[in-house]
Image 1 (tube, rainbow, N blue to C red):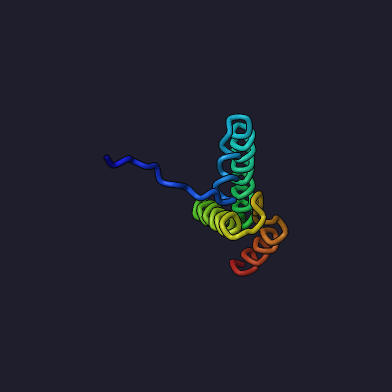
Image 2: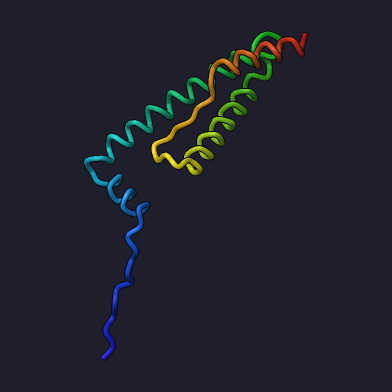
Length: 109
């Protein structure tokens, strides 16, 4: 008689971390924090695009919004997947956005 066996799963640190993060007591706070950070990130990126694409570049602000959102998305994915710190979050800073706005205004005029 052949007995069916269940495959054995190795207990890796990643698997333990994911199991703990998906417990009902921790899932809601984690999802809430991610949702709030995501919404704030979108609002900040739209404001950066509005700052950079102002004045003579105002006609291209919709393209600028898409570019800044995509750039922030790529940066966050790279940091989330490449960081050794499990709760690392990244977002673009406001000072380079202000400098880019000055450079873009100088190039157009």
